[in-house]
Length: 331
Ligand SMILES: O=C(O)CCC(=O)N[C@@H](CCC(=O)O)C(=O)O
Ligand SMILES: [Zn+2]
Image (cartoon, rainbow, N blue to C red; front, top):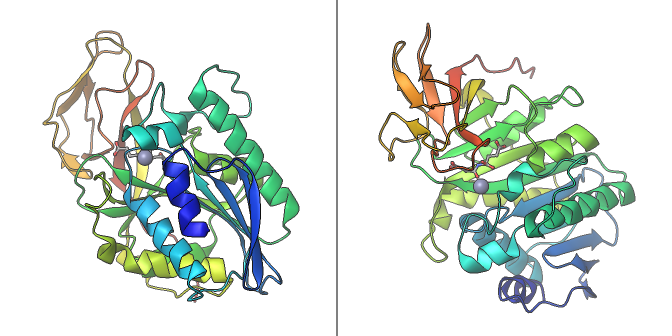
């Protein structure tokens, strides 16, 4: 049933729509890779949870993590206590083991987007699925979009907090993420039309992109390192209050600048294998771009996150960040 749905979806053989029963819950498949778990009676603490993975097709650890969660539900080790929408994002890319097929799905979650192509259509289908899910359920909204990073990282598990003026992050989120093993947080500085931004901006959901280690093939992931994250996801699906940790244990960063690739011959002026959060001193040239000119670190050091010179022209080639104090969190 549930674990089978995941395998069949990855094999491209899952039926488009289907429903069934679980002990104390039912499930509905709304579209390929879109599965809703509906408790017979939601618990009082429950959130309306969207858990998405595979928005990039080569990011497999989050899929395996959701696979474990579904298997534990199916085995009766967990009981659905919160409405939960499980999404596998870019199914053709997942099957090909590629980040995307034509274009980066995680830049297309914009209601104004009218682009053609498989990824643009999939973004519209997923936006509609999220809209309908949140409209059906009255609980506080939450969305964790699970990814893995291309590079090594000084902080292998980190969160990106999307920018919007529509919703602030609840203090409990910092506690939950700290307990789940998240080591660092990036506050975005402007709109970025990612899936987590969509849920936060349009639905005021507590929404984050969570980077859970490094891109690896199916079977090569260390799920042991993600056990605390699995415990957080399990608590959410069960509608229980998750465990809290110390947010001060996480490093917080503010995005200061987004390096965009403008020219065909754009290049980053540091080694390809540079880990995320590597810091560069003032005066260092970080990028050369015939259209935009060179980018040189100005007055204070900047750390680089998600460097990727091979992005499409007009796309983000890196985030440049600086440490910022942790948010003030009351008891
Ligand atoms: O490691 C990389 O370069 C990319 C990893 C990744 O896919 N990250 C997300 C972050 C989304 C966000 O900014 O919230 C992405 O680039 O889409
Ligand atoms: Zn990703």
